Length: 214
Length: 231
Image 1 (cartoon, rainbow over the protein chains, first blue to last red):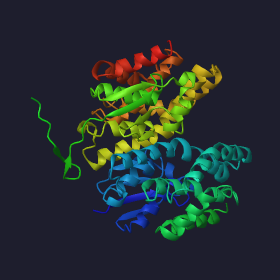
Image 2 (spheres, rainbow over the protein chains, first blue to last red):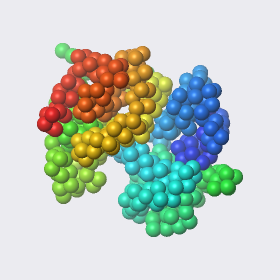
Image 3 (cartoon, rainbow over the protein chains, first blue to last red):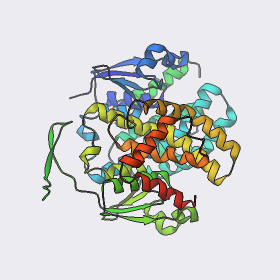
Image 4 (tube, each protein chain N blue to C red):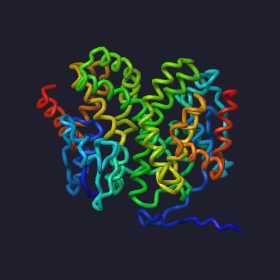
């Protein structure tokens, strides 16, 4: 059955966007969505911390009140009934899990450093250092996306839902930040035209950034 | 005779599934590497003798040799090679692959699965991220200041897990899970910084003692890492 429950998130938070995009993509209308205003510290409020002690977004509350966090966990939970998102062979599963490990240790680790310096601390030096640190990853994925449509091959997987919000935000950091990585740019264009929910996912980010005057 | 059924009922999805046989293939790793230890420990725990183990001399740079890079372009350990030559890396992927036939390591309900996946996310971004910085600063850079700075950064995580382990036997409850196989090698190595390093976290120390006495393969895993480093 389609997942139900409550998703707590924010339109600028990349991991929140991953889950929100998947819900739109899959036409899910049974998961309620609540915005946690990170900019005013709503994630540190007692009510929220009581549910999510690590005060993270996204957070997910099941119908019986059971709460958990981490985009990986939530994405897998809300897509549990979607056969198209389940690996069909041991190799497909290995490749997906391999990306899930790299997503945190390579992609998100560097992209979030860049974005935090852009959004929160405005530390230009650290931002530039972050862009240098992420360069090998962007080059690697750029090469890969020159040979295949999506991150893990020619089939859309949960890896794309995690990856795209981490890299598309680079354009928010600075115009033409992704210009050296034309295959990534074309990949994001493909997502915009071919994959339901992605245009709204990135549109929501831009709208919120404008509202925050960033 | 122990009967091996071809099928089992997956309680979570209420479907009939084919029993997966113990994993086979080749594990490439090193006794010191924490993610390698996670997988090697699980193989010992589960009495898997079908996976061949090959040592990659990471301290000597063997992971960058052309032959290894041809299999594992990111020159990581652990790496896993399936019987048909298909290769992949990342301890999460390798551990899940070798444990796929083990029903005791398969979440029994959506909540158990959510908690396990929640830990997988936190493992990289919170536990491993900080523990490796401490160990690299201490063992390789020999930088006492950075080591201590790293211990300050990891403190909230250790305090949190110390509190959790004061209430339950293992990381996610009273049942051993794949989360323990990932977590323990990241925290036990902090003892190399000095005997006082884990002293503020007595529940973590008791947890490691429980693993040593109760969980097959753990004692050898930690001892093997010590030997590999000449400690």
